[in-house]
Length: 297
Image (tube, rainbow, N blue to C red; front, side):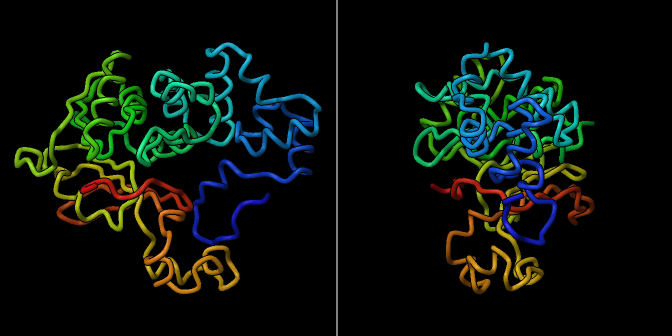
């Protein structure tokens, strides 16, 4: 499969690979289009050349409830848990997309909003949900509320039982996300600041939806025994585990090139539980891309 040649695992493209023409053709022999292509736009474009039909348009002509069902089948086919797949597919993603972009709601692709913000691809959101333990989560903080789409998926994943707080550095986008969530029946409290003293150490789950140099700035908001999920830059030690001919070390010839360059193109989503002041690793997912640091934008 034509995914990036890297050693750090697990890798996002292990789940949702970008396929060659021959790979798509072989998969179409045994699978319907949505499963053969993972609903990835690049794979769908190749499938159209093979079938002679506009497969993207065919998918868009399907009723939205059927699009959600097919997305759920794709998520299940790559090993996403029923809980995470069900949560993602319970959210009407088109209601969180900007006007004119809602027709892309159930492709596995991010959707830009404004000023660098976007709705993450549903496949990525599902994989992030799968890293989070479901039990004993009452208070949640999302840093980077954006459109509200990810928060809606979290609410569904936790059975709508958790109290969700959101922070968004760009106030207008934060209000947009809050409005989207309330319009779809989800409850959220929009925070004006992360410096409020009553936010320290009170959340069972804190997660970020933007690129971070490290997870340290957000640890203070997580209670003892709580969970923290952050898309972070890889460490020098991780960088050095790569072969010299890997994509990562070809793209960034030194670690300094990585940290001073476009490091947001290759991140690690790390999920940890805070136990007695230390991080207990729960899961990692490599080779993901997120928007820039939004804490102080």
